[in-house]
Image (cartoon, rainbow, N blue to C red; front, top):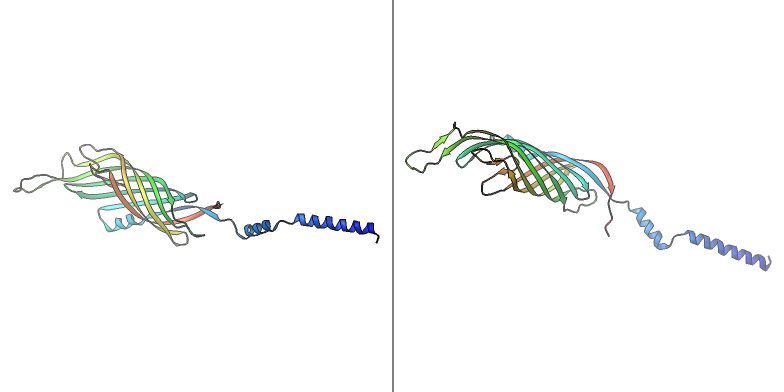
Length: 250
């Protein structure tokens, strides 16, 4: 082999080595690629969760003066943001100071929940803050009332059938609710929840010759206080129907 052939061989070997080297990725890129391939992108299940309020079901069986039910549902629409809906009806007979009334009607509550709890992978528990707009359509019946008589020598008179007693129909009310609650998974796709609610009355239709004393879904109302409170215990079932890639945190 002469010098010319040797130089041709060396140049060809250098060119081949450079080509192979250029096709390989730098070590940093290889390491990043290995990490990316080894970790599957996290996914978030979009879920529809629905169920019932256990408190109203138990109270309906335990108290002869109350009957009602409430259906609850929420839809996970983005990360920790849930659209929420509650629909219910109630009938309650109650003695308030000098009057005995029965209020009955239906209501709905529409709003959202924001989950503040950081779940581990595969978990979907919640500790949340929420907001609702609520509206009721109801009626209120004045069953009886007691005439206020300050004379200590005569018994107080209870009026049962009078022009003031009877049913007031076509009533309605609107209010806002601030919600604090939690939902915990107890079985696969089954959740127990608890929420406490503060109500602020926005508007209500006042019955003739009377007032709204109890509003279904809102609770007791007084003339000098437009705030109320309530709570519920929910049992819900979750149905995942879509998964989407979770954005990585910086």
